[in-house]
Length: 119
Image (cartoon, rainbow, N blue to C red; front, side, top):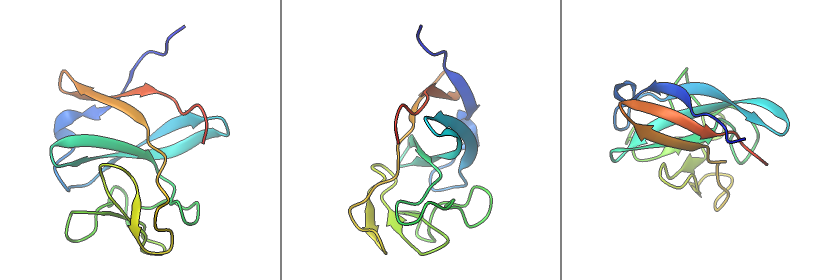
């Protein structure tokens, strides 16, 4: 049976380069924190776990972007990730990537489309 989409937030809750919205996603290891952000007009979502050391990334609740609003940054060690791919471009884990979460934006809502199957 196909999973039913789950509402994460209203589309207007996410501004370009602004605060992210935290939510939870099911993984094979159990429930995990995740986040959604808007970058260049598109919403992206990732498990809230740095690829360097598995700690939550936000400085404060929802603060995922660096000062330039061009990169997602881990508050613990400064790893910087491209928002549209989740690939680390500088810091302690270049080339590693965040775990993407399947989402869609439609009818004024951001929807979780599928839980994490592995990772």
